[in-house]
Image (cartoon, rainbow, N blue to C red; front, side, top):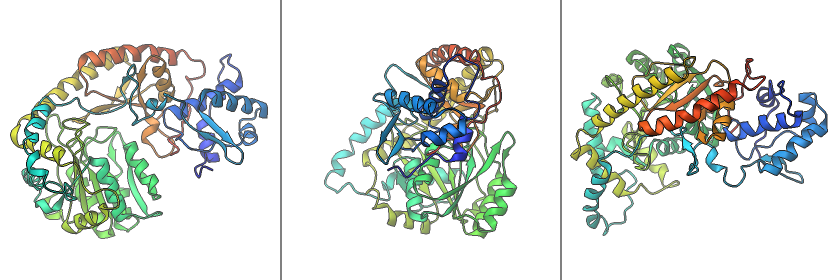
Length: 478
């Protein structure tokens, strides 16, 4: 039996406004709302739906109507039912690519993943790294702290930013997400309180959820972070950890100012919380680098998560954790229960990219500058009633739609062969129905093809009866 169920509150928010003026039968409208929620991630896989009678009472329809809706979803492969098990959400064969994080269908244009194309220097760097392979083979290949050469290079790069770190204050991970999982394993236990900014990176929220911690979100609005409230709560010792994306925030693109960083680091030190700053796209600034915490205060319990995967290529699974030695030692001690280190060849490749191709990151920034300008112009031309925050770097735009229909737009776009990431994916509870994240880190031909599919999908949603009104849309039920 699934231990995850759709709560009554979540159900009400999810189904609010389900009945429109369309001619489709009520059971189809119920099935459509639930199907959309499963496809765009608002209802996770393996979640038990309410019983037929309970849902019928909530929607004020006959039980046979809900029974027909569930029968349709079972026939389509979105529900599985069994004696004593209830109705549990699944995906039909071949539909895995429709959920965030899965491999895309070859025929689906993927605008959900915010990642860069492979850097042109990547292949030459891999070839140079292969020359180091014979020297590695006589050894075990296990290095849980990471390749020392890469850690030295990263320490030098931090020094250029004004942060003094030794190589033994850096641990190499297999991407920033893996680094976060290592931190969770080392410092948190089920039930521990954790602060996050909202909206936030969906996979990070999922990692915390799977660890059984209690999350509380602090809004990131058009004016930035809720610094005063979070500063107070951190200083009062309410959290074991705070996870923030301070540099080119995912998904809004905002950058936290230096004063806010200092205040939160000071508050975390007073309250005994670990302040985790996800900096995986920090290097991808457009005009000027983001600020750093004042070096004298770095010995506050601050952890930096970095990544080469966002800078050079998603398949280059190299990230790192940078922190005080005590923190790094504790992560190292806990790591063996997860893995025994990352692939050394990937780490040597990353070191070579930074050492032997000194302008590689600059060229990536220049390319992203052009791609950002192109997508911004196309959005203004094709969708003049959509708006977005000004971003200073990163990989994507956070768009605001004139109607709260991003889940419906995501579902309609799929019918046209386009995969999108709707706003509710980035929230813990309700929110995000007005928002859509679009990455600009693709070449122009790809973006034109994607936007040519997005336009008819948007027209289809705008023409759908009943979607013009305000509807509160529930965020993911993990």
